[in-house]
Length: 107
Length: 122
Image (cartoon, rainbow over all chains, first blue to last red; front, side, top):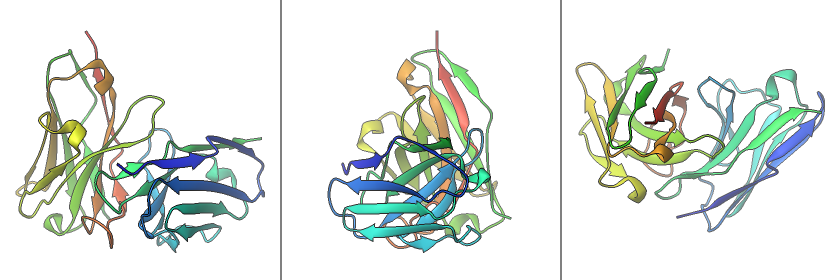
């Protein structure tokens, strides 16, 4: 199975900060990586697919980059609605696997 | 609009089975795959498997082989996930999610259900 290592596990930041989350795959996954935002009691929300493609309707402050084994999610200017959990997920090969998550909370 | 509406929370005893449903609306049911993902308390999400609602073909994660069954009812646009021989470590929120593809292109989960809490306890 492909292991997805996400860091940091927790990130404390303020509104307006630039935030970066990293995801590393244990073997190459090309660009088949997605990023999701998840808030308690709600459905996970797709932010980024194919490593760097912004899902329709997602604010442009979210961006993704990387390929192969190293990927990043960047929030250019953190907004109050962005405090949540974030997960990366590879869909290169079965079983699909997720990172352990990054909790972005208020500093 | 696209919706995946899941059935309500369940409490089961160890050794029992649970069947969770995911009713799709707002799109052509047979045009998208449905995946099941679970998340246990304090853990990352875990992919369980995929079903092609058009022809009913499934692929399961090896971890769940022999214990999980995914089916669909095209007349009601509903997908079902049944997990048997439940153990306490099966306590988790179970999600269904939709993809256009089954791997690579178009295989990101663009819509998710809100989850079904399954608690396994004696």
